[in-house]
Length: 67
Image 1 (cartoon, helix red, strand yellow):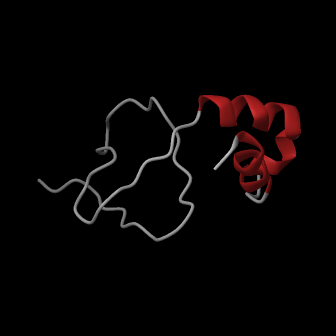
Image 2 (cartoon, rainbow, N blue to C red; image 1 turned 90 degrees about the horizontal axis):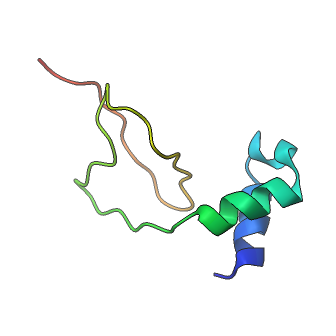
């Protein structure tokens, strides 16, 4: 996908679309695509956030930490 495709996709996301096209361009430039396979962990509860995730296709499970 090209940068214009990335911006067009981000414009479809409620909340992000309120930022405007130029802000979405900046986000798209800094974004990276990631293919996540079943069982992969993106982040763990309690870890400091260093990114945001947008699911473009597929789904995910959110689980809480277990003691």
